[in-house]
Image 1 (cartoon, rainbow, N blue to C red):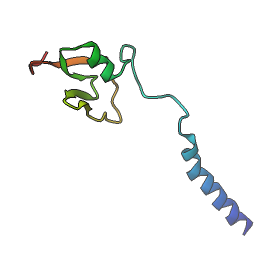
Image 2 (image 1 turned 135 degrees about the vertical axis):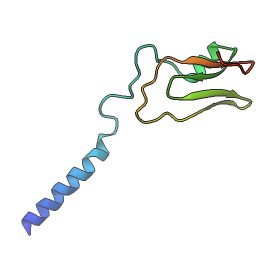
Image 3 (image 1 turned 30 degrees about the vertical axis):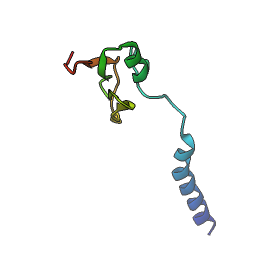
Length: 90
């Protein structure tokens, strides 16, 4: 019985330990030059309607801004304008 108890305790530790590890380790991969938020980029580029960092696409809307969700294995680059205010690609 004591061996079974130890096995159960070890199994619980191994399965529960990763739950307590949130926030440990490096953050998302953001190469140099990829800093900044899409809102900041679009604010500083008044004629840009749609921007991308290679992972997400953000578009100005009447309600503010709408962005896609980045994939889990994406490595972002610097924000670039992909469509100007007239609706034409840059």
